[in-house]
Image (cartoon, each protein chain N blue to C red):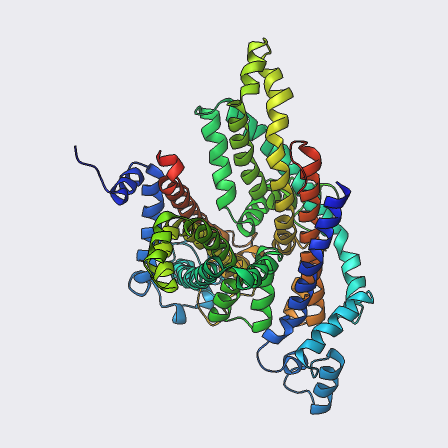
Length: 283
Length: 306
């Protein structure tokens, strides 16, 4: 009898879940769109405004219609995918890196370092979700990097708390005690033996964080606090659409569906990963 | 219980002090000189110096934080640069519409989610369950800044049943509350279903069945009551989310609340107004969390306040 590795077992569980296929399919499609935007979009976003087509409804030339300046909505939605995913991945990477570092140090070192770091986390968590990101983005000025900074500056706390909890549990395991007895250095234990144990819940958190960041980015753009350096954004198109609901309802349809599908797909993936990686479910 | 409440209140003090410190230091994130940003490129050096002095921007950082504490303790949040009125007065004018919107949204969310979660748990694995949980998933994934305009498009523009925006009659509450409450309704439905299913496996349900109680009595009298305990926490925690969600909803429906006020402040670089609104939102969030903690211990007698 051959026994499969845990990794293969997880892949097998994931492959049997139709939600994973939907989630991975939609995410893969969005990544493809983002990477090939300049090849597949019908117009150049920097040179697509045609005021004579202002708010024109969908047509054979402009499938999703035109916006306030006569720009092609399909092109904006395609490039908006790039903006959303770029901000999403970069922000999640930055906030996860910071959160993991803080969580590892706090959990392993303990004592007053743990206390200071965790009280900082508590403090930032005392601000409701998007509010601090909104204030930071507004005060620093609307640019792509400020949006990333504003969301990452408040988004690292969940991963820090999660990793710290994991470290506290793993630190008591026998294999960690054995490493300590063998004289392994603190950092070697943390990076080589404890950190890999925190990866499963982190992957799940990263998937849900990605969907959260995409919504926050679109919300900031909707409120006029997103990147205003010419990068098209789904939230910004929806913001235009809000003021033109009677005259041009088409402005609100496509970007809304794009956000909805991507967030739904990421939630499906997150749910499926959580079920597959949860050891209690695997029993 | 009283000592538990006092301990929770005491624990709030350092968090509150930290929140105020962060809010007072938000102005440091402004690139360059905030006076330049506020007064624009044509202001004279004297005007800029006067503004810096008035706003305390020339003071060292720790003094700026201390001054902000003093200002708050004296009951002031500064003066709005655009409205030329005390920030506290502006917030007092606008807080009622926001709280009304959040409360109505919460009621709508509870009215939708409890029956939905209940039906879903009773008919687990059947079509009703799939339908209800499908709604829940969609509710979580649809952002409110898209749902709002879509509801306006359908119910106001196409069907003409409800007003488009502003706060004029009871009908004006329907679309903003649905926009704000749907995500919460979705989350609560999932929570209700899971909590009900967990409780339905408990021994007391088997005992109640053995005593000959009908399903309706078991669910209505025993399961629902126990299943609602974790829901209180979620409702409490989500109320803070509703308050911030109100910022976007108010923007969609031109609702004259705190959300519109903070956006006015942001768009006009009115820093005292932004700071004041962030502080009020955060304070409400902390207070709701505190009340949730306390009520949790009241509702479930098995939980001993720690």
